[in-house]
Length: 383
Image 1 (cartoon, rainbow, N blue to C red):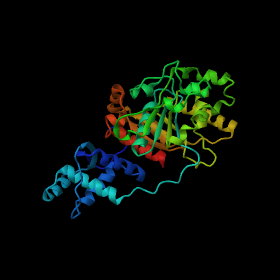
Image 2 (cartoon, rainbow, N blue to C red):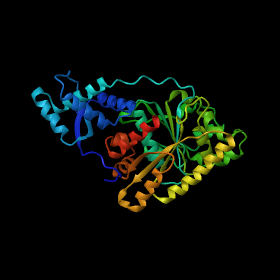
Image 3 (cartoon, helix red, strand yellow):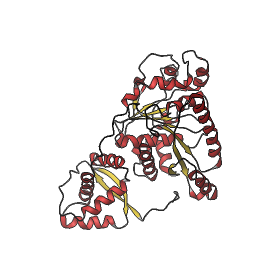
């Protein structure tokens, strides 16, 4: 066990469910702020005491796994026998009953400030900004939101890890748009991210190596009279197409980071905490040193431009309690900060495997522990 918490005794169960039912469950659980395993537990518990329930079409089902309290799945199997239905049908009916008894909440009132903007940044490299950015964006899209994921790092790790090519150095790019060097529609650069229950709701704006020059050019070009607004100006039209825009930032403190921080500020008329920065860290001291530098940069930017930038919270990534006092004491330090710890992502093999296979984690291993934590982080950000 790598996470520093103990949950009730649960066991992994696997069933074959139709994709529409699995997707509806994930969306509804996210809307209501409920863990999927808790939703299924409640559904199964209630279903076993029902006198009857309409059959659910389970044709074309694929593997669905979750964790139920020990012994509950055996009770479900026992309840299925006198009803002469399969275990898969019993599970499907349980989930269908939970969905029917937990309707979708009323939609939120329309926003007047565009998409919510979530910036993921930390001056320190290697803390997992890319994996957290990708996982949170996938989870948001899985919950029914339209999400744009921006690879704002010229190293292009996010783009490559998801199996896409970086934009050619001579092609239109986000950096060229920010510098006023191209007139094409920025939306033409977006590519859909395929796979999993987030498909058709998640897009990527790939990286281009020309972003290495962005800091220097922002400082000197006349095309950008106010450096900090460069990203916001080119994103204005795209914002109408999305609910969330998630930005994977480079590990730097230059003008590029300033543009991202300014973009994530609380806009006039926007509720506090709707947009802002999420800071991935690790349970060790250098992450704290890097955060101090980032905090200083944010304070200076806020003071100079008279804006507010909300720190939505920290994500403690790659956590392994087996590292002993270094990890546990550092985790305690993060948890004692004024800003919340949104989640603790364990150090497990599934993320590395997904990167190796160039697949999104929530498509490659949607029921792993890391995916579960990332969904919980996404729910906390969404509020």
